[in-house]
Length: 102
Image (cartoon, rainbow, N blue to C red):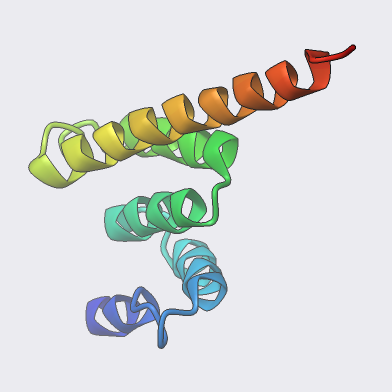
């Protein structure tokens, strides 16, 4: 079963949507599969679904606190922080463009 779940996580030729679907299926098969949650967070982040990625990250931390101290999770945290900053900058920049007038 573990080997089968491993194959679910692969990015099939860069198809993030397929990888996302595979992660969801893996979690449905075994909801204690920490790699599925981690990779689901990564997929959501790659798709710029920041709020969902944060929610997934929070679930990961709640379900797998012992894994939340690892280097992979720390990398995910940094990437999420950067994505939030970029999202805020885009929103601020968009608001500034709309506020410019004659």
